[in-house]
Image (cartoon, rainbow, N blue to C red):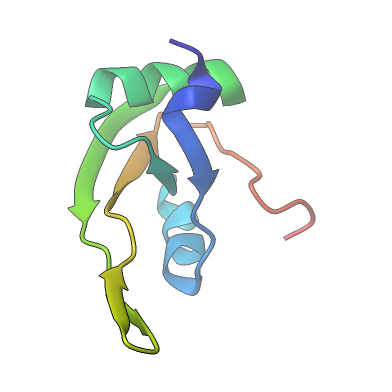
Length: 94
């Protein structure tokens, strides 16, 4: 599968930026993507070695617009730990 179909976008928050010091990077990934597929996608896209992948399914928050109710879509987050000596520059210049 194409790596761009697996990784939706990087998650850039204060917490995820702090994890980068421990060689851990957070990504939003396709719902249902297995850990092995996520690891291969990160290795292909960023030319790094992946040590481990932790995933979590995040439930969409309920939302209202006037009388109509709904919820944001559910999504999947992956925290990827890189091998020793590897890093990813997600935000250039940061």
